[in-house]
Image 1 (cartoon, helix red, strand yellow):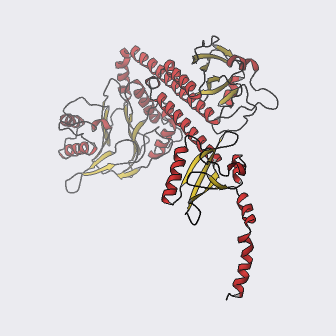
Image 2 (cartoon, rainbow, N blue to C red):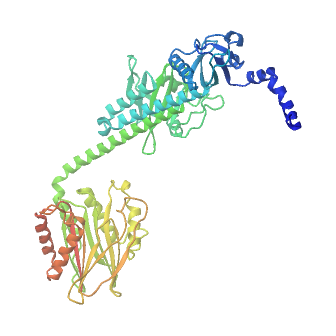
Amino acid sequence: MTNRGESAEQEGNRPLGRDLRLLELIVDNIDDLIAVIDSQGRRVWNNAAYARVLGYSVESLTGSNSLIEVHPDDLPKVQGALRDSMLSGSGRRIEYRLRHRSGHYVYLESQGWVLPAGGDREQLLVVISRDISQRKELEERQALLYDQQSRQAKAMAEIVHSADFQGSDVEHGSEMVLRILCQTLKAPSAELWKLDSVGEGRFICLRSLRTDGEKTRQDLSLESLVLPSLLRQYRVIALPDEAAAVEDFDIAKALSPGAGTRTIPDEVTARLVPENTRGMAAAVWLEGKPAGFLLVTIRDPNRVWSIYERNFCVALADLVAMLLEGRQRLDTLQALETSQKLISAQLADAASYVRSQLPVNLADSVRTDWRYLPSSTLGGDALDFFWFDDDHLVIFVLDVVGHGVGSALLAISILHLLRQRALKDGDPLEPVSVLSALNRSFQMDEHGDKVFSIWYGVFDRVSGIIRYATAGHPPALLISPGSNGEAEVVWLKGKGLWIGATTVETFEGGSAVVAQDAELFVFSDGLFELSTIGGPMIGLYGFGQILVDLHNSGDADLEEVLAAVSRVHGSDQFEDDASILKVWFR
């Protein structure tokens, strides 16, 4: 006996469960391909989706061999999946290609379910498949793009690490760039053009490369007043103009031809690219402005350059710019070396001049003594001390990185700037203010890539306090008489990077009380960055201990200091410029 409610529910479900036509309509109108195949791979039944996706009629597929349409490369995989499923009783998920009625192949993702044999029915396999052609196409495009970008990255690395690029060899380095440009874009021709400094709007072809065996360009010059302004506005230009490529890109911008007008004169296009070819020009920038361009051409009048090809061409143009800039620097360096050789006979006089600019010692309530020891004929150290007014004594030691004329002249120019109180926006009595102003005025990119360290202090005679700040310089050492006979030692440390190394102001100063008969030692790192007979370097605190020991012995004369350092070092020849200033507060 059945429940009344259950009977009603069964009555409601019965039409759907028994109406096979309704089920067929549902199965035939879904997007998934459904097929039932036997152990031999023959289709027992399939839904109408096969007709929509593969173009075959349902009738033609029924009873057909499902393996016939499988792509030959995928056939072993499909046969193996069928065999394994039938043997194990468990279906598998696979991807493979099936031939469309028109001849092309469609990518399918299939999942199988095994129907066990029963009664008069043999074991069957239900296969539900989905068309994944668009997904596979996208994956292939992404793989192709990844491969292309990988090849481009390797090509650029090959250029950068080549001996020609490292040595700023423009001739061979640019030839490598052109060859890689042709290989990567499969182009028969590539050229490097440079704006001539003599004629306005005149370009000359520095290098031309052809990979198809044809002769290189014979006309090596081009005059156009329009092209420089276009190169300034656009990093990359398509030749002729691409009316279809008017998108804005982050790095490479397509050149918009405007409303029915040509932005590049026909005569310029005709000179750069032959008829029925496509070209692409990427601007080469030097010193903040376009100075030339890379040009690549290809025999495909319908070619539209992709954003990735444009960006690659721009990247190569930037490498060419680095190559040209490196050549300019080398030429400048060689010219400087030539000049230095020409004035080598005058270096001794120059060294005497530098030494003459150093201060005369004080001998009143504050006494001074100093030593200046350049490691070569000219060094980058300088020092000074002077009464700013009746109550304030300015003290500083600076060290320009490097040796020779450039470092010495920069050191002396800084010395005069501070001595003559001509530093802009800096309060001479405020050490941090002075260092900040120096950093603004002496950025390394404006002064031959040179930086310098400095210790700057201001002693107030009335209060007996010295305020100080440092920029990449060793701390000064203040040694004062102690109450128990032992000297009191204070390192006057500040914080801050070298002057000119960064635009960020990183300076922090400090202050200390100066007792009567205290001795202040300000020095450069050339006195402690020295090897010793035993092997390790003297070091800052090792040098400080030498000063303290000599002070306690009552003989901290600078000649004795240098003699003690020479003994520890094992030589009286120092490896770097060395300067030391002693200030005795009586």
